[in-house]
Length: 397
Image 1: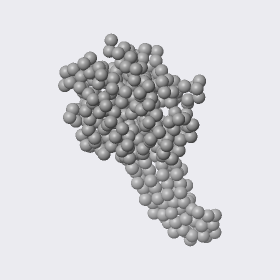
Image 2: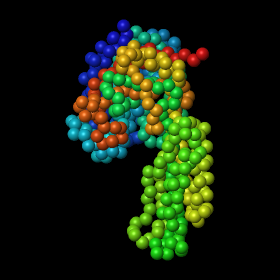
Image 3: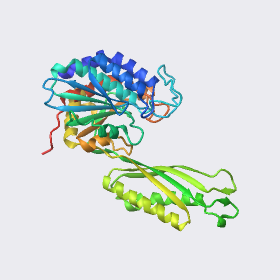
Image 4: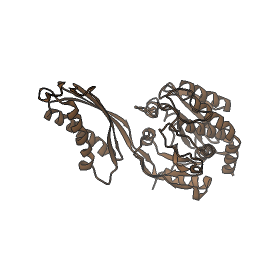
């Protein structure tokens, strides 16, 4: 059976995959700067005999043709960039680059896709169709590497009928995978607000525009946008995460800068909320005699898992993992630029369990202590290969 052959090869190549992960983890690169990572991926694909091209400067796109290559085309995607975080793990493969760390598991994603590519290439006489490999830059930073690759034609020539992406889940024990139909992750937009006014002595506020007070009103007012304008049955989050202004105890500053994030699960509400935010900011500025500049950096759309593709993937996962090792993914207000792909073609974004509570491997992503139970890599590369070889998208009747 093909599934048994994939499992066997995943086990055989596990040691090599761990070496790959350790190399990637020790040499992280920030978004759109993945030049060494890109070169490493290209060397590996060349070693495996897989044809590939470079897109969006550091993206790597590979093609593997099975039997009857035009019968179906499926894309498998992994992201490659790291985060500006100082690693605190004391492991042999810890980051060698100060202030940069693979704290979101993209080294794992890239490793698993390279492993899957090697397996699919070796077994290409035993599955039908074409698999397009997408090693993507810049997932962690707007505008999102997915949007750039799409603009450069990654979903054409050949055009995939479906795309799969995988993400580590440090809250799910190793040995499990999870899936969810429909909206599974939120959209994400960045808010940048600058409040300006006449500063002056704190003892004479009537001669100034109190920019600190204006900022305080903005924080309170913006929170009410969701609580009094959005349906309570539609998840949404607005958080102001940074306020920078002032430098001493007795001076009202002439400028305060604020930054935050807005998240939503509904695209119609998302852009309606943008308009409300603009009006709130304008009216507070007028009422408090302040000049307020607002920039909404429109980011990633919701990640939407196609229902038909989800059903196919769930069944395939049960076949590969065993039915008692597949569960439903929880809704998350986190964001992923995989949403750009799922806007254009049927997509399925699933989770790979990487936790091991008994060994204390439970730290969350985007933290300096994040790591994984590395036995998850064998599962991840096998699952990606299995999806690539077997998934067929059919329209829901």
